[in-house]
Image (cartoon, rainbow, N blue to C red; front, side):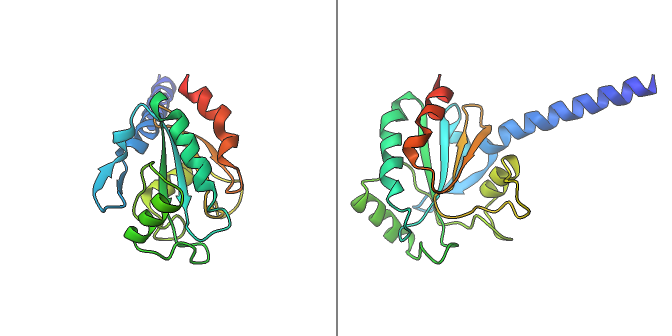
Length: 181
């Protein structure tokens, strides 16, 4: 009888943990590039691509592909969220206003941009702590490797895939389409 009780308790605890993980993404708070706080629950029911970005990186032209993904799929329930980060060789040194101006004038970015954050280390934003714990790399540090590392989140708020910074946005089309079904 004791064994059955403990087994039942173990199963219920695991169900609770899995349920909490599914909704944790939506409970996280971020600040828009204009400095307004918002919960990620604003994107509930959408397929979300989270990307750490930089304006002075060899991978910066990926903004073009990210915007193309956004324009192609936004009316079907997809959104790209861009999080500027200056942790990789200082490749995002600008202010929020400078970053926004660069993104809109150089790449015509219309997807949501957020305040500059840290993605690694003791001051890593809770969003990136969560994403890295949910989809860890098979390395000791499990850090974000570089600018433009990408995380794909399904409609239920579950992170489903982590992509290398060198993965071009167009390479995500099949995965996005699958999640939009």
